[in-house]
Length: 177
Image (cartoon, rainbow, N blue to C red):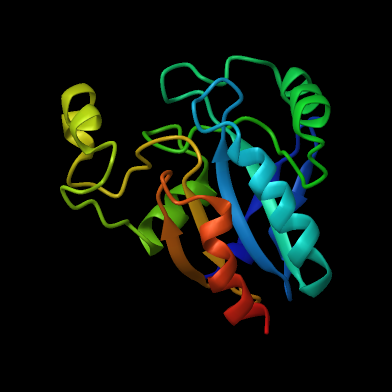
C-alpha cells in the first residue's frame, strides 16, 4: 500500500486521487488558521516555491480537532490562506486526523509513522493533561504535524509541530537531489 492509493476531498467539494502526485515528493500537513503555529504557512509556502520545481508538493489539510483552531468553512479557509499568507499550494477539505472519523489517509499516515514522543516533546505536558489517551498512541498531537512521502508514495518521516518548515529543508535537499 502507498499514499497514492488514497482519494481526498478537495475544498470545492470534489475529489482528488493522490496517485496524481506519483513521482513527486509530498509534504502532507494538518493546518489551522487560528493557532500559534499558523505562521508556519509562510514557511510551507517558501518550501513549495523553492522545492516545487524539483518535485516537492505541499498538501494542507485543515483540521479543527485541536482547540477549535480551524473553525472556518472550506471557503473561508481558502480565502484566509490566500489573503494572509499568499498560499499557492493545495489546501484541501477540512478533515479529522484522529479518532473514528479520521480521514483514511491520516489513519494510514499515522500507522506508517507513529511519531516519537519523548519527554522533551514541547506539547507533552499540555497534551498529557488534556488528552491522556494520546500519549502512547500514534495520534496527531497538534496542528502542523508534517509527513514526508517519497516519489513512490512511501511515508518516510513524521515531523511534529515544533519542527518548522525551514528545518525540513535539509531533508528535502537530500531527497530531491
